[in-house]
Length: 149
Image 1: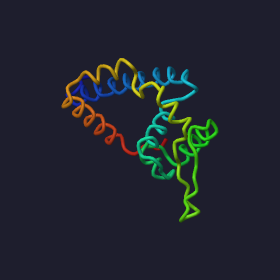
Image 2 (image 1 turned 90 degrees about the horizontal axis):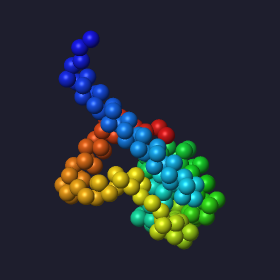
Image 3 (image 1 turned 135 degrees about the horizontal axis):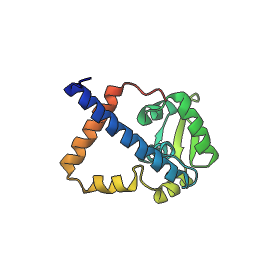
């Protein structure tokens, strides 16, 4: 059976995606040792730290999670005291999510969302290459379609 150039590119792309997935899984296990957190927990806390306050629907778009999946994570982070819900004064139906002081303190000590060796190698790249690589990965993610998780 003969492979076309496109087949070779698909094979190379799949292998690269698999390596990234594996590195993410290994790093997620390492993060689990950091207070039972996972990369999505830390990402949610980081987004809240940078944005100030968000509604759950806005946050779900920022972190690429369905509202249902995000709801369970929000409950867990709230139970841990890392975020708080605040009712909107002008619209009582709306709730804001805010990072708590405990959440901010945790982020000060939290490891990178990226595996350490990748974060270090990425930081060592020239700025143009970091932007180019990020743009290519974002494009590859867009080609995958919408995330359902």
